[in-house]
Image (cartoon, rainbow, N blue to C red; front, side, top):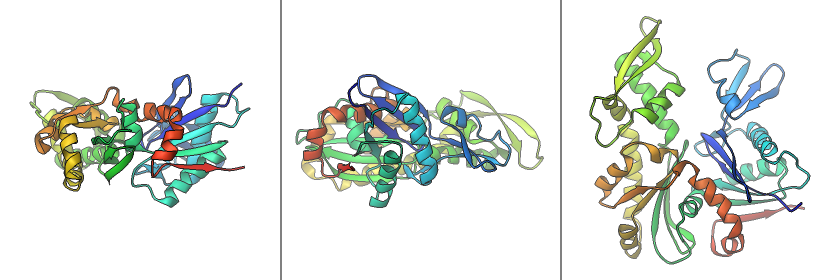
Length: 339
C-alpha cells in the first residue's frame, strides 16, 4: 500500500477533502456538535449541521473556523481527525496533507492549521493559499508571466488576488463573504418585516432568491420565522427585490475589494487581466448576477469557474503533482517536516 495524499479545503462553511486517485471523498459543513455535560464530540459535518438550532442547551453546534481561519483549535482538531478517519477508513499509513488557507493568514493562524493536521495523523503538511489553489482548480496555467485575477468567495472570506509566474502579486482578503451575506439577510428581514429567521432560512434565500444584477420583483418565496413584536410564528412572502436589497452592501464590499486590488496592480498585468478576465470561484460565485455586476462595475469581463464550489479542492489535489515546482516557485507555500 502506497502513501496516502489528502487535500483539505478547510472552509468556514464547508470542508472538502480529496484523496489522490479518488478525487473528492468528503464535502460536508464545517460544524462540530459538542455535548458540554459529557465533554465529548457527538457528531461532525452534515450530521452536526442538522442539529443547529434543534438541540438542548448543553449540546452546542460549534463552527471551529471563523473568517477562513481556525478560531477553536480543539474543535478544529476533532473535526479534521474525524473527516480524515472517514476519508481513509484506516490510518495504517500517515498521509501527506495539503491544506488551503486564505491569502491573508497570519503565522499564528497557519501554525494552528498545521498543529490540527499533525494531531490528526499527518506525516507532512503543506500549506497552499486559496487564490493559487482556485486558479489551479480552474485549469489556469499560472507558471507563465501572465496576469490572472481570481476572486474566491467562501463562507468566511472573499480572497481577491492577482497571480502571475507562480506567485501572488497583489491580494486582499475581504470579510464580507457567504456568512456575512447570510447575516445581512437576517438583519434585513428583521428590520423590514419584523420577522426573525434562522441562518438556514437566510442561506436558502441567498441561494434561491438573490439576484444582484437584474431582479424583477416577480420571483417570490415563502419564509417562516418568529414575529419580533407578537412573538408568534409567522409565514411571510418576500421577493427577489428584497433579497437583492439585503445583499447589496456586501456585494459592493467585494466589488470595492476587486477595484482596490486592480488599482495597485502593475500596468503590464492590468493588460493581461483585461484580456484574460476575472475568474470567480467559491460558493459565493453562485450568487446570481454577480459576474455581470463585477463586469459592469470594473469594465473587465468576468466569468464563473466550472463547478466553483469544488474549484479550490480540485486545485489542492492538483498541487500534489506540482509539489516540487510549488516548493521552488511559490514564495508563500511552506513545507513542514516532523520526525
